Picture 1 (tube, rainbow, N blue to C red):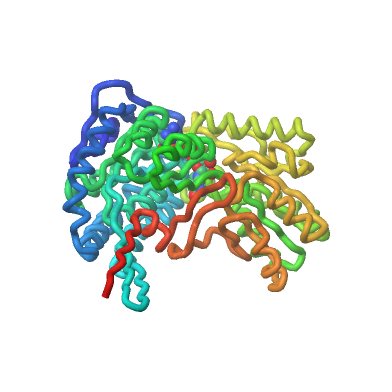
Picture 2: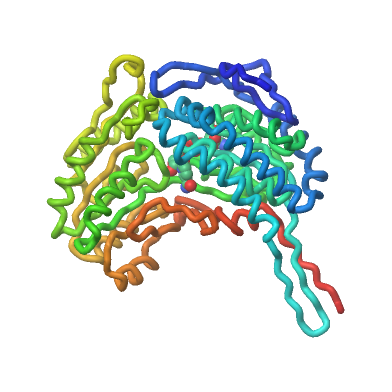
Length: 482
Ligand code: NAD
């Protein structure tokens, strides 16, 4: 077992390696200091991971579904046994509050493995019988697949891909974000603890441009499952499309909440504060545009701003800190630049708008005040581009159709929320909202069986339940003369 957390190496063929060569610093956002290095793995390292995964594939794919499921349950148990340590690691690596990593990120990683372990034995394929013929469809694993994840929900999103890929009988080369590699590194230790056969799961560390692109370009990789920015998704699509690999892309968002005067006011306000600022606004599903019916706009604005100002930003280790640090200094500068842009575009800053200078242990950390903007046109850049920070733009609307036009009027289409007690309105609006997910009077409630993903520039394909298992298998139809 490896316990030195200052060198986070690759996990290949069941063992850790730290290759000689360039490294990348890993920062602790809460305190603004480097605490570890990862290798910036090159194509030769990626090759060794792919070879290990190819070698492990036949035996892994040949296991009975229940045997593979048993391994996944063991991974879930081993993760759960180390939950406090993993939550500490996730908080240190991302700057998110420890309580959030304890209650959301790591439990969800455990749940991802349990969910697909219990789904697998029930995963059936179709058969079609006609006079004289029986067609039946095999769903076979693809081979070696790549799983690439972002920094905002590191272990949560990486395991959301690894679990179905392994369940379906594939072997995996996974690349976590170079900004937040720690829990992926620990997942290597957990794979050893859980007795996962060597080579079934490999984790390669490094930058997107070097390690990620070597992985996606390799012809031995049969599918790429990616979550991250739309810009990177487009680059991966450019490389992968001519090779006709299976491709799943979960990308950015500019999600709209539509608040009607007949909503459950208190519940709406509280949930939208969470939806705007959870994880420092660094969730693809955060509601960054809040459209409010004109008749309640002033009241809503006053209450929303007052409560946003009262949100405690602080040391992620303290239970009272509702928000922690942003993930990196460049990201904080990006968020700040969007507030400057909003002012140039004619917007007003109702609260926040600046980084926060903290004291003591966290004085060098990257903290940003919860920020509420108003007075911006629906089409300005601030209301069109993904900021991915604790910044929300309020806009009044007069009619349903105006609200829908504004909500739909971006290139993104990940999620939308509706806040109303008028069921007929829900039935009218839900189908016309251009989003992969519409939450009505709730936010981020995730039933793992449901299709999850975006439309337009937010995504390609769906994850979750059978969608994930279908993505990670190839259907083959057998037509049998009876
Ligand atoms: P990013 O696109 O910069 O990086 C994501 C991953 O891709 C990282 O592991 C990175 O190293 C890798 N990568 C970068 N270039 C690559 C290349 N050329 N080839 C292969 N891999 C490459 O995204 P990020 O900044 O880490 O994450 C934030 C973004 O992720 C936001 O846009 C957010 O909306 C999005 N996101 C989407 C979802 C969703 O489910 N739709 C969930 C979480 C985050």
